[in-house]
Image (tube, rainbow, N blue to C red):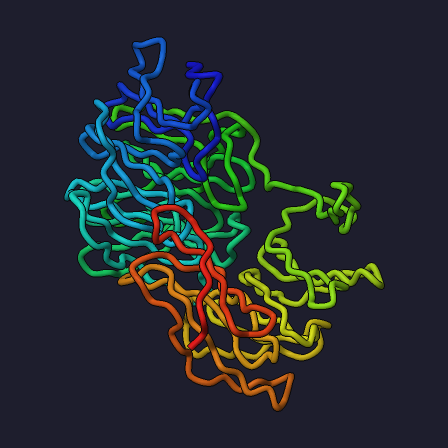
Length: 443
């Protein structure tokens, strides 16, 4: 069945969701007012109905009884009645977009809070979220939860890389004991289908395997089901959904990692290629003198030297992210389960500078290199700003001091940047309800 020619791939997980009874679908569309809203449509109707209040919504999902639609918008998890009405805010998340949510029969919603964090549980009636999962050894993100029948377990995808999900694991957590079990290795966006099957994406193909939701056991060899289901191996999202009655709905298309060109842009809007070949490059950060570019590719950090036109690989874990240059241009700090320090020429071994597992994301240094500004999610207050003192007597082996809170409020404060003279820190906050730039004086 063809649903809509105006449907937009707005969600990172599911562009279109179908109600549990298989009678209704919901998907984001661009409407005549020029804005993106959710449209809901009964399958025996010819056109969708706009849901006012769902501007900029993505990743829609139905409640277990089909009477509500949950979605992400503006850094919030929200819900709205299928009959329309004002949306209800359920809580803030740690990033502008979410990465999947699922409504359980007990009235809770298992949901992603952001990029490099585990899953949380939101009360569907409103209230503070509570932690659901913890990142395991080598894991950097948990996404795409699905509440399993019976209300006692939640299926999700766990990855060792923030940008490459083909080698992720499909896992399940018991809501009663907290025990986690790997149910399928090598795939993403795992979903249990009524009738006893687990389906997931691997290398652009939808695969299926027999699965017992009571024992959480997959048996037999995976079988190829579809090769034209849209999915994104860079985010781990799959573009399909299904009802309890057996109706399967999906967006057709080949799964492929996005690729783009990295270029210089001058004042006249002219561009000049910087990296020869297009790729799934993210998080580009220029060195202080502008001669080198650190960037992410496939879960690792690389450095391009413009003077020599060479590229060096700095990490080999598949789970690195957020490179930030030290003021000397000879060192980089990055995140992989915690904060690590490495020479930008690739010599030596990365040194841990923040003890224990942490979702701390580095962003900028003071001009003297003695203090790092970073942001980190906390369940009580959202994303908070911190600074880390560094003794750099030995530049290759800095000694960290005790992390110091800079800003901890019930809003998401991110991307802290020191001013050149070190007197101010600029940052982004959603305190006003939208993303705004603020400045504050370091303590």
